[in-house]
Amino acid sequence: MGNLVNVALDGMGGDNAPGEIVKGAVDALNANEGVKVFLTGNKDALEAELKKYEYPSERIEIVPTTEIIEMGEAPVMAIRKKRDSSLVVALNLVKDGKCDAFVSAGSTGAVLAGGQLLVGRIKGVERPPLAPLIPNADGVSLLVDCGANVDARPTQLVQFAKMGSAYMKYAMGIENPKVALLNIGTEEEKGNALVKDTYPMLSSTTDINFIGSIEAREIPAGGADVIVCDAFAGNIALKMYEGVAKVLLSKLKEAMMLNLKTKIGALLIKDTLKATLKDFDATQYGGAPLLGLKGLVVKTHGSAKAGEVRNSIIQCITFKEQDVNGKIRQYLDL
Image 1 (cartoon, rainbow, N blue to C red):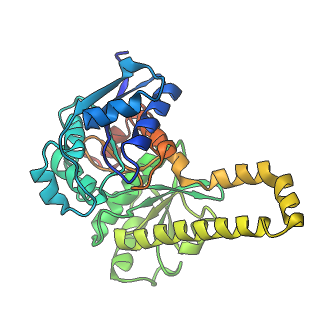
Image 2: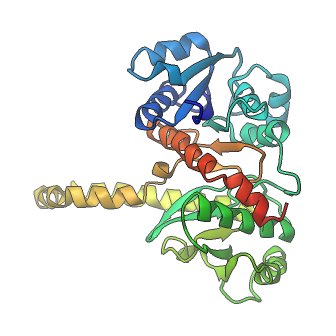
């Protein structure tokens, strides 16, 4: 029991809280014996949800709170004023060393602000990036940054590349991960001022496997393991990625239900198709870690269901066991 990974879970954050959050926590506990969950939020609401399930009660603890940070609130102000919110209390559990990691489906802005203000950056890290895993034809790529730093400097992108390399090597087991710079072309002279200034810096960075620029259309094919960009470009790429996938899936279902012939065909390929589509389900990889903090902070989608919450909690186990923060310090020479 002494080797448990302790995860602080924001029980009231997200569109489907507390129901799907609690179910995700229970599923994680039942799937992995190496984790304990500290569930923050309204005690009565959380207990009512927990009564629906069977789980190892010794590995879940409710930490009562009285406030909730809503999606539309100003992040920094909310963090400072709502100190008894489920999100702030959960972050403080990491700050105080009681928990190894924090997971929330709540306000992205509040998670980003709270992560930096409460948990704090590793000394020497300029800007922590938000780094989700996105599916590709060969497995997954890490998109870094996708939402934390809309305006970034070249030195920060170099740090993103190093932190992303450490994450993919030690958390995902990819030896010598390929790093690429998101650009509008593969030629070195293309791009905006940020990309042009960053390219030679990445080229001269000897402790990463920089392969040059990558166009967005090459990301789904698995052109690189780490995609480096500022959050403005990264968020657009990610949202387009998710939107196209959603439309294609909808159209595919529509085509298969068109008539009797297509329905029979759909029945014949059902199992194979389900397995293929699962590979492109980003929720199976958990949430997006905010890299470069003193503790692990993971942001899941606001619409996260139990499966994504479960996988985000289990993701924290690998992060802790592989000492990804320690490896990030090594990559950054901190």
